[in-house]
Length: 349
Image (cartoon, rainbow, N blue to C red; front, side, top):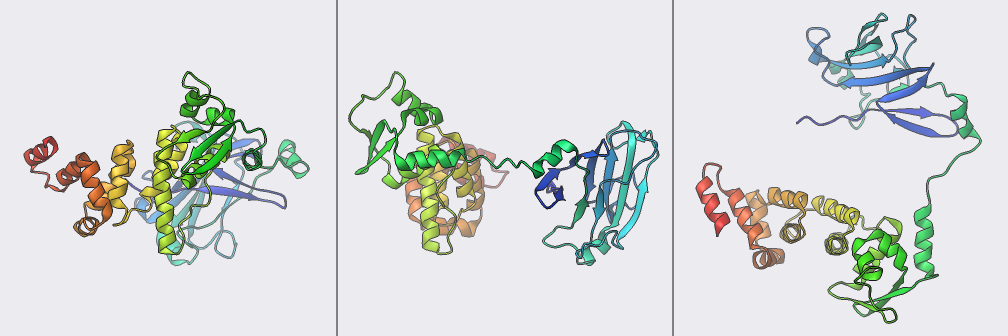
């Protein structure tokens, strides 16, 4: 499958910057749809693959088609670079790309000249989009609504411990929290703290088989919907600790049915599969029904050199003892496609 190309248009003013994807509204009362064809369109000139086609389609069939709210720019910001072969507009009422009747304006770009121009930087080139803002939009100059900071208030609430009404004892450390917040974020906590499984009030609730720093990160996510800084550090040892924390948090997220946290941990583990962690991550994926992570590990282990390196790791020993089914699936994957019977035998063992 071909890679998807993202196309965006930016509005720049003294006050605010906005980004739009594909559809641009508000130009002289008409709707514009911006379509990008990196390999040209078949309906155009004979050798269409030689060209990049950029089409601004107006949703209305109008008598006097205005110039579209887009412009190609070179790296110096100058419009209409020399590699723009033609700019063609249609007459009102012609068939559009979507099959209706309207008008459109097309930029045809010589792909080879564009690639040699130096205007492509980090696989990107610039398209200027200019919009006419209506009065309602212009009100943003005087009243700007900031992004939500709800998570900051909840983080402060956790930090201050104002109004806490439940305490947990985890690996020798005590943590206080708010029952209602935990119940709202986790159906497991809801059952344990408010439902039929409600823990007795008074003493702290014991949390077994979890490290204190993992539970602390779990609470942070429950209150803020984000994790403490677990970015990969430049030091390999610290990076390994961060990946291990993601592994522990995945287990905790599965235990308390916090799906978004589980997805974040799976994504982090998929992005950092190496010889040290592949077997451990595969075991986790098998035990906690993480199909995407499991597939990523199996693909990594399909390489003979990777497999040999993983077999010397401690995680491989754990995989053999705790998840023989995952190991059997790996062996079946490594067999040639024409050995179906052998694969069936391995999986049946």
